[in-house]
Amino acid sequence: MNRAVTRESYARRLQRVIEHIWTRLDAPLDLEALAQVACLSPYHFHRIYRAMIGETVAETVSRLRLQRASMELARGQDPIRAIAVRAGYTSASAFTRAFRATYDQTPADFRAARRRNSGADPMPVEIQDRPPMRIATVPHRGPPPQIGQAFDRLMAWAGPKGVVMPPAVGVAVYLDDMSVVPPADQRALAGITVGPEVAGDETVTIHEVPAGRYAVLLYKGPYAQIGKGYEELFGWLPSSGEEPADAPCVEVNLNDPRKTAPADLLTELCLPLKS
Image 1 (spheres, rainbow, N blue to C red):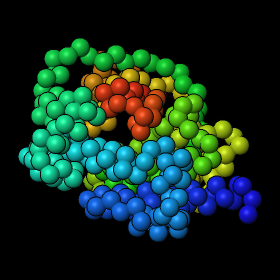
Image 2: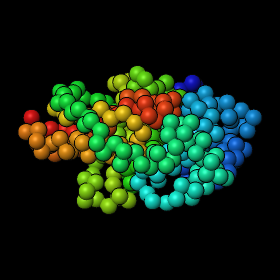
Image 3: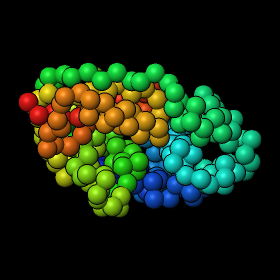
Image 4: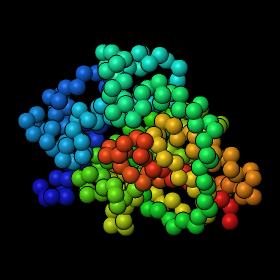
């Protein structure tokens, strides 16, 4: 078996593992079972996973559980104790320590952030002429906050190919109008920028985000609170003298969420404009 085929084989195996983790996020971590999903020796599985994904399996599970908890805190009303239990913590105090270590805020402060920031300075919007972006994509169907599952599948494909962030950037393309399409039916693409040498295959489809004029807002902070950025972007539009083009919004993730504290994540929210 040549090296290219070996990389493809590893990528497919790790994609199965990522899907398995996402669908069983509340189950106990079982490395032997995950090794079976990957058809790899339990002795070597963990080191192969870490080398190709960029984090340990335990770090993946912890990141995904805390990410889900952040979404629940920002958008729901469930008690913090209930969210802590779903995230795998036996006490609210243990959950608070873990959450604060990652998000630099207690869960209660994170939930209250929208109210505290209601009088904050507005985020600036710039009009930019942007070049096209060639991206390898994995489809997502469902609520936008769950697009992380598609991105994790994409990263399992990208790692063995040497496509990493940076210099590549993550790109999310939202294909439906979120105000009219039910969340369960909303379509999106999770993408990563690639060069012309990368072709589509059974995992990814190549998509080009067109060049053009965009209104761009640079949002800094956790993905769970990114709605604040969109509120400001669309609040800017009526007084801007600009009109949106008939094309989807695009998010450009400038840093890797696996290696960046949530408070330091940088995301460009790009609204296409008519010329």
